[in-house]
Image (cartoon, one colour):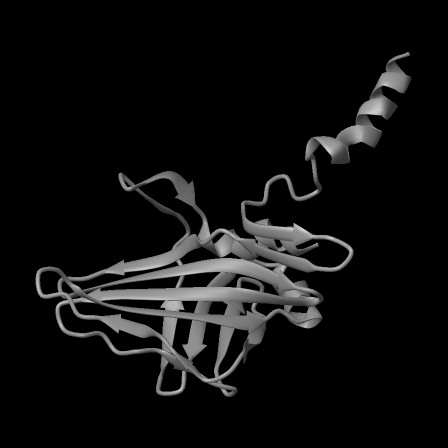
Length: 190
């Protein structure tokens, strides 16, 4: 009898909204015969606080049909107008992994620059967003090792980020482990 009850519960799990991605936090999730589109909610990956400038970097994962990508959002708040980040076909993001290997993701999309907002009463702002292809080789590497650092290559410049082990303070009540982002989230694109 217990086995029958378990079998009934197991077979009806899809009807009750239980999925293999139950630990994934989706902003958008469409998964039908005709269309697959998934976008995870943004997760803070790094922040740099300075006297004249604050930088926040967010990661999310996206899948459209068979194409999987990492979406990076960079927000810069500064006293002086921060520069725009622009991306084109030569742009990429490269990760150095804890095991010594690298994963390089190329930019997906057309030439694109972020947007700037001038604020007289508060800090000026620059926001940029770009998607980078997660091919099978890079996914395999990123699924096997923590990330240590990242280089974002834009149209005008490169900049490097070293990830902290944990992001936690009074504004971040639940600790975030940026080095484990891919280890914990790539399963959301399965």
